[in-house]
Image 1 (cartoon, rainbow, N blue to C red):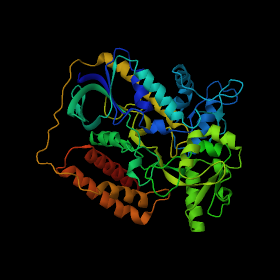
Image 2 (cartoon, rainbow, N blue to C red; image 1 turned 30 degrees about the horizontal axis):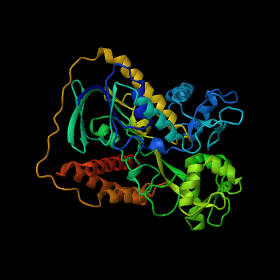
Image 3 (spheres, rainbow, N blue to C red; image 1 turned 90 degrees about the vertical axis):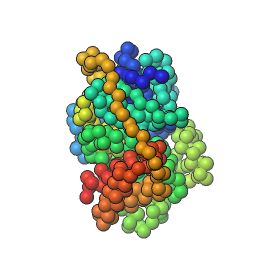
Image 4 (cartoon, rainbow, N blue to C red; image 1 turned 60 degrees about the vertical axis):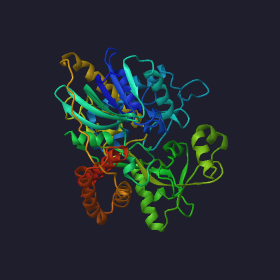
Length: 483
């Protein structure tokens, strides 16, 4: 197998796939995917993709304004303008790839409403929009002769070289080193640093941790979004997301007494932005002395609910609840990261030739809180920004590849059991929706100890170790920013 490439992309979600698609046809690309391509946070996205496209009753200015409100006006206006003005191009491109957005009986697009949006601008495929988009992007990538895809391959080392980067990759058959002139990190979120998350099992923040170790600036990692309506069975670490769109279609939030309560906290009621709703649930929990909360949409027509949310209906039914007949238990849960690897308007990090896109990147578009359904859009827009910038710079890059050395340690020992669990417990108890100030400092000190142990001691280099070190690094940066 070839081990020298123009570009190495790490991550096979929407940002990684779209970045590969938009690279020049004569650019040799290696796409490294930790598990199978469909296992990514992008494929779990339910609600849809926000954007102004063929939308006479909407405008880019309104989309920007709604995003600014949700983000507490801490958004980067330049990157936000790129996001909203490029939305039409990305949606049209998705349509050209065969993405099947839902339509109305007259053939127009069915746009739904979600919390924080002032217009119906969410393009969706039932309640599995992310999976539909990722599936069509995979099909497109598979037609590209210049793109090599490595599934079940994990980046276990990354070093800057005089000609770009060297990456150590672990596969079932062993380790290999690949070299490139440019790198695009599209490794997704950090959900597994928490005890409960809507993220997939691969969301351990590896790309952010490797970027940090290679000197890239990491910004606002403490801006963690907690989705207010994750299905609450008090058992599964990976929680089923109950889409924002369910509330957009008229669902009510109920407390332990099966009473609506959002009127006590925000005039926008159930359609307030996610951070507001999550915080309101925690405050109501304290007021009632109960963590029992429910989402009620069974007052709507059952056939409409089943057709609009078929995946959610089936998944919740498997747990013993029928959303067309009864309220379902919900509670806030870690969902998304607004901070990440700092990038400019072209998605380049503070390390030359190193790019980042998608959830692992900090573009600034979300401000302090992400507006629903802007994430898939951000992944596409800024992955394309990276590809365009790389294409522009590629002709000036010298030929040849340096290869870094990744020495194998002798007499390495297995990772002790329980470190990852301890990290998750610290984060869940000290830095949840409303941080616990009394627990933050002690938690940070223990995280420092764990990270120092992982970095300094001679542990076997395997997936368990790499992910544990990533989680410790992510937790360390988050808590360091807030104490």
